[in-house]
Length: 410
Image (cartoon, rainbow, N blue to C red):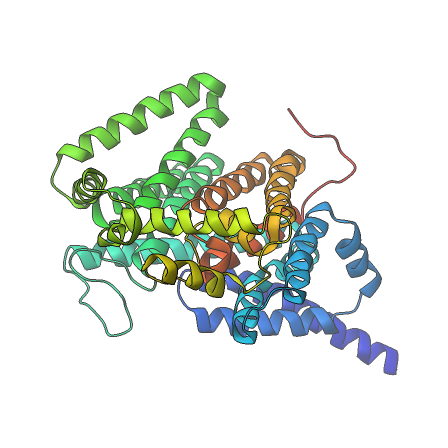
C-alpha cells in the first residue's frame, strides 16, 4: 500500500513538473517572477517524480545534455582561479545556471504532445505581447505602471532590446506554425501574426539587434524552403526592405541615422564613449587586451568586471561588467577552452537538429541557434534572463524528441 501511495505521489509530481514546464513557455515573455516560481515547481516535480534511472540516463548520455553540462562545468572551474570578488563570481554563475535546465527538460518534454503544448504556450504569449504592443502604439491601450513602453518604443513587459528579439523570433515561429497549419483559418491567423511581428520589429520598436536577428532568420527561411536560391531571394528581399525603411521616416531610419552619425565621428580611446557605437568598440578593444594577456584560462568566472575596470582606469574610460559580446566575455573569463565549449554547444544543437521528431522541430531548433548565436555577437545573451532561459527552455523542449539512433536527414 505504501508503495502504491508513493507511486501515485510520484505520478502527480511528474505531471506537475510537465505542466509547469509548459507554463514557463507562456511566462517567459511576460514575467521574471513567474518564471522563477514555475522553475522551482518544475525542479520539485522532477526531483519527486521517480523514474530516476531514466532521468540519469538522459543526463549522462544525451549529447545536448553533455554539451550544456560541459559548458557550465568550465564556468564552475573558472571560479577556482583568478581574484574575482565573491559577489561577481556568484553573479555570473547564477546567470549561467540556466544551462542546467537543459538536462531535466530533455526528460520532461519526452512526450510529443507536451512539446506541442509548450510551443503553443510560447506562441500564445508572444502573440499577446505583440497585440498589446500594437494596440498600445495606436492608442487603444493606455500606458500602464507595470509596462515599459512609451510613444517611441511601444514595448510591454521587457525592455526594447529583449522585446525586439522576442518579436523577431515570434515572426519566425508564427511563419512555421502557418506552414504546419491544417486549416485555412489557422494558417491565415499565423500569417497575420507573422506579418504583425515583422512590422513591430521593423517599424514600431527601435533595436539594431532585432533587425540583425530578423535578417538572419529570414535568410534561413529562404534556405529552408528552396535551398540557396531561396537564400538569395531572401537576401535580396531583406536588403530591399532595409533600404526602403532607411529612407522612410520611422524608428528604423532614426536608428540607422544615429549609427551613421556615430560612425562618421568615431574616435578611439576615452573620447569614443561619446557614442554607443564608440563605447561598444571600446568594450571590445579593452576586452581583447584582457584576452591577449590571459588566452588559455582567462581571468576566471566573475573576473571580467575587475580586469576591465583596471584597463578602463588606465585609459580613463568607463567601467563595464560585460563587453556586450558573449564570445569575448567567455574567452576573457574562461579562456579558449570556454569559447570552444560555447561554440561546441551551438554546433551540437545545429548538428543534431535534423534528427528531431519532425521537420517543424528541426527548423525551430536551427532558428533558435541562429537567433542566440547571432545575438551573442553584439550582446551577452547567456547573461540575460529572458534570452538565456529561452535558449535553455526551447533547447530542452525540442531536443527531448531527439532520436539518437537515427542518422540525420538530408
